[in-house]
Image 1 (tube, rainbow, N blue to C red):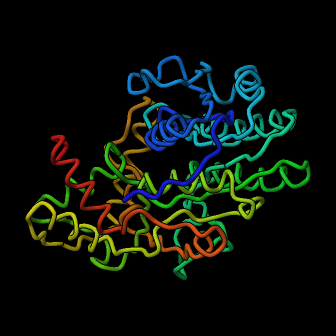
Image 2: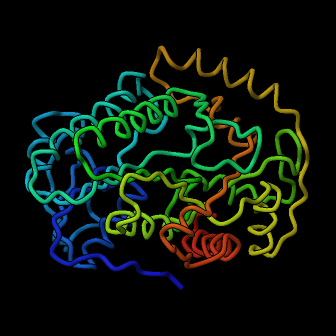
Length: 338
């Protein structure tokens, strides 16, 4: 059962990334709880799923100063969820604009709002890179491995420096791997789990992966926006424990009435092939069929200590990882995605 965090009705909030998977869930929840919701969206963004909801849309790019000034005017809480994910044609400059420049514009604009309550900045556990000594907590060193993680790290470090110096109330959330009904980024794992033979790169049980269901994650966002103890803090937003990738596959496979057999495959040929694909595809703006970040997904340990979230804020989860995986697997099957 979902745990619903209270959120004050009538508060004017701004959501960036509202049309993305996580942002959409958050936006709907804010509307349901009586917030006055404003959202930045590109003109090309699909908004059919929001029909009938009382959302004030501000069209444009999240890194456009004019758009940001208009969107931030009068808001009391900002949920900065927007992110640039790997797609064909996205340059390094776009990652910097979406992650770093947007954060700077939003934060500076918020300083002019009387009664501003909280800037909830959404980072990523990817800023830590591969976790050599799991589990990692909020103090674990940064080691971003690609331009996405590097620019997310730069944005987080900037807001953590800027906000205290300028009296801007803020909280940083670093989500673990987000999943749930409707997600497409981790859909590949659910599809693989339906196969009789599942290839696993590297050690078949060595990779620890930390998940968070989108419903639980968005409740964390809402709690972070209002809890007094969240002010100025950083939290890793993940389930209480990580699972080995092999165990994740087995939980999903069992929901599909199967018992997947895992086959260990060396990772190094895939890293080599991914590097070649990226080099060939980039000049043409093509989306590579395989890239290093996707290979790293199957080979790097991502295990975290999420106790701070529970101990300091008293957060309770609406489901276990296993329950969430099974429910999501059913949703994919019932909707014909698997």
